[in-house]
Length: 267
Image 1 (tube, one colour):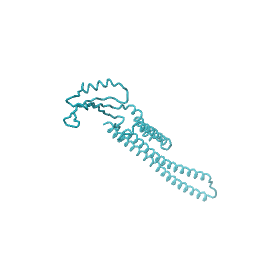
Image 2 (cartoon, one colour):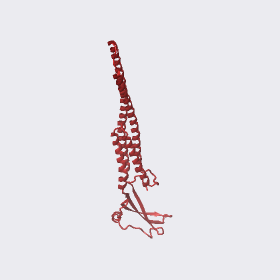
Image 3 (cartoon, helix red, strand yellow):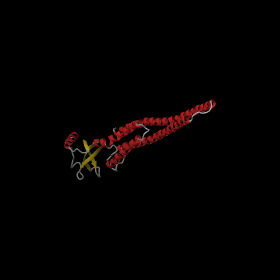
Image 4 (cartoon, helix red, strand yellow):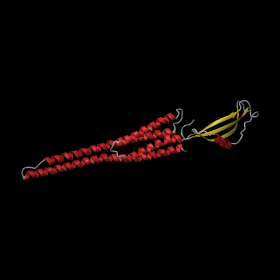
């Protein structure tokens, strides 16, 4: 049984009718009616609401030789073609995994400064891992090729994992920017408090010197604050650029992957 296109797989089963004792001159096998009648009649009789759907029954007439060329046997082959009903697997596995992927894309619009985005993505990853366990119990282990539904779930699982790594990097850059911003704000507040506690005393010359020192101190503080703000904007800007670039590449990768998989899955 080829499960490569599970659950959209189609299988054929051959039933061969042949005499092992009588030759073609002694026994001839003939069909009662044609393939169309057999298919229609079988569909009417086949009332089971199971996992499989009967598509067609074809008849092939042939002659074979057993042992000697003159010892010909009459042979009739019924080719029964059945198709799996995929609705159960689409609802329970394929659609939930696709919805998880859509939610992961929409999570890029959550504020990256908080921890909600990362926890949300980790929850999605754990949910897909549960579906992978269900899929592992559903598929038999004797398949020659990897089922495409396994490739579908594994690739989406990997994409969400890479998205989590990108979120961790963006959160780190945003935290560095917030740290620089809080340090600059603290230094500015401290300098203002020190200047407010200082009261100019003495002569007019001393007051002018104090005034000049205050102007110079304010200029140096403003310059240092501008540098720290530029460093903060550098960290934050890098985080936003990485986030937007990754989102664009992420969407392109998803579109290409689903397009290629759809062409292979539904030829």
